[in-house]
Image 1 (cartoon, one colour):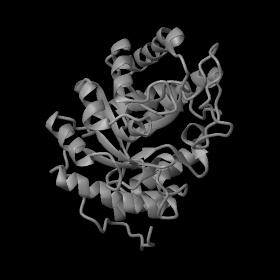
Image 2 (cartoon, one colour):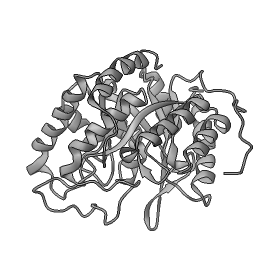
Image 3 (cartoon, one colour):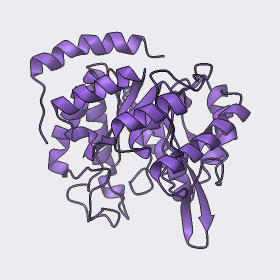
Image 4 (cartoon, one colour):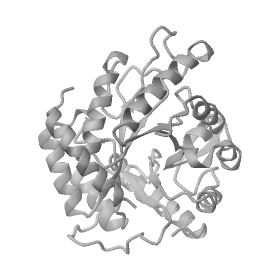
Length: 330
């Protein structure tokens, strides 16, 4: 991994980022320079999709999001078979051009920060043998991943960087304070430059559920540390995410929301198309709206029952859109 930005470019870009933040508020189809679907601006939420849930072809993913879904927001994770943290200067310039062409803004940098084993602890049984979303970084590289994510946040005019809480341990208690300290120090570093660290609850990591999220938020008091609430991940760990998990969360600490569904089968928990699983997304959207949440709700399909990522995401978007409409949030 390498950075193609100079320190001077980074510092100069912070002013641009601050200005941008103040303004933030699978059937084939024919692409066009204008949207064929009414925009979603009436929603109290910023409605987005994670780009690689559609395609590794970033141009095509943006066309689908903008022209087929009518979205104005995109979450960046991997593209052109590269993790976002490994994009070079030419990749970034091309991504910026594509986003502008499709009238899309970036919600956050969905980085793989801290999705690694905690040093000195037993190796997690969830630690993968192969990379995920084209990311394969060690704990010792996390400082570089963070710096890269900061640079990318500036380049893409977003104030949020996603992280995780290290691969899950059978007993995290001996390491919990040190992990909280790591999250606190990172959030404070971001706070000083106007950025926010959003922790995703992930069933394979030490913070999996709403209950665990509430504990970590309590232990990491930085105002620049918020939760990327993921009801699907909580469900996969066996929690009823809404209302049970959600009701444990401090509402003012929710800074992002991922949208996917899950179902319980004879084999265990599996992903499902939005609206076809066990999660009460209508209730969840109503609660978010009631509680004054105005940040992102981002489609993270994961389910592949329609055969391809694009077809599955199109079907899941239909379910997500229906739930938003029923919740009075569209």
